[in-house]
Image (cartoon, rainbow, N blue to C red; front, side, top):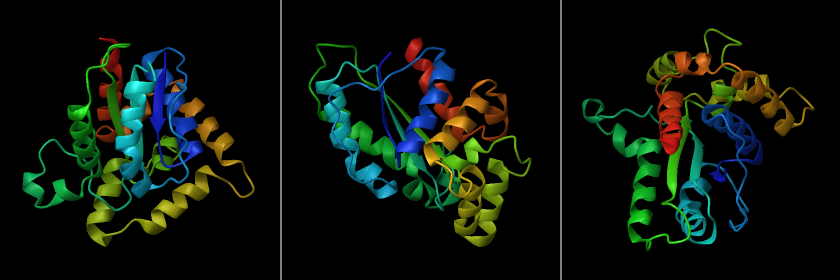
Length: 210
C-alpha cells in the first residue's frame, strides 16, 4: 500500500510510518513522484501542504497522504472550539484541514487511482510525547493541556521530551524508530493517554480500508 507522508522531519516520517503500518496491519511504502522537501518544521508543513497534495493526487497512485505536525503551544483539537474562544483559529489540526479541503476542491477528478485520502496527525505537544508514551505515567494529553493553560508555553517540556527520546550522540531516526516499534506492538497506551490526538488520527487512517 502506498502512503505519502508530510512531516516536520525525516525521523518523524519514519516513526509515523511504523504507527501507520500498525494501524492498517500492512506494510506501506512511500510513492515515487513527490517533490523533494528542502525544509521542515510547522510553518514548512503548512506552506508545502498544497503542493504535496497536488503532486500526490496527480503524480502518484498513493492511497493516502498523512500530514504530521507538533501542536507546540497551540490548543488541542476539539470538534467544537466555540466554548474556548479563539482556539479554532489557533488549532493546527483545523488549520491543516482547511488547507487540505481548499486544495482538494480545486483538483480535477483523479482518473488513474481512487480519490486521495488525507489523515492529519497533530501530536500534543510534540510527536516525541507520543513516542515516549507509557514510559512515564505523567506523559499524557491531560497533563499537557493543564500545563499549557497554566504557563501558556510548553517550550521547556518539549525540550525535555526530545532529550528523553533522543539521547546524546544518538541517531534520531534510529531512536524514533525504536520507540515507534515498541508502541506498534501494543497501541493501547497511545489510545489511552493520547485519546484525542492519536485517537482521531487512528480513526482517519483506519477509515481508508472501509
